[in-house]
Length: 267
Image (cartoon, rainbow, N blue to C red):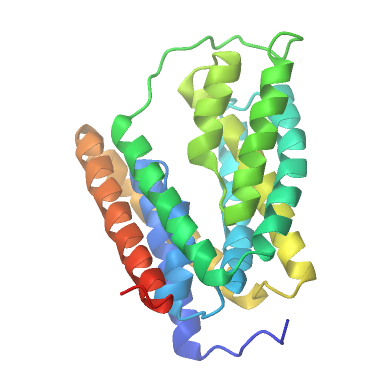
């Protein structure tokens, strides 16, 4: 592809603000925020190439996941062997998915991404149970499920350039019956691995704006701290906050579908 287009100072500031919004939402409701990274980079920052937006987003999401993984590791909520096997299978899937994604028309990719956002919104509204076995370990019985779900999740993560945490968490819970707090911590291993795989694959084709990714991550760190503090204050309203955030995802998805339909001359 051509050289990465030069962005203005205002666009980089918008990138930092967008990262702050994603980090804030993650800290506030605990998931789903990274799905907003691509539409924010495209429609707020003004990156016209959807592939460049996806590659840059993948790098930013991976960096944020790695930072959060450190905190979860300190808290002892990461099942490393289980997460490692899941991530290894998923990396192969992410490589395949991202290679396929690079070959798909940019506007088509955004339309499919919007449809995925609708699925994410529904999953957030459904909520997730908290039961599970905190002593679960990697065994010959759950390994095949981990490999299968890891590869499938990696393909979707790579294709759309997302972390895929909203898919990884229920996959880990289904495959091993681990409790949700272990699934959330362990999922970050996969999010980091899938994001880096996708970002590196896109970087080979010149579809990563490293500076934009950097300011996006920096904004996300600041926003995440603010979101986490507010979450403690509004802990009794987390259900309502999740509903509002899911509604925001629906609105953004519908807007993306509208823009994609207009670009295709359908409306």
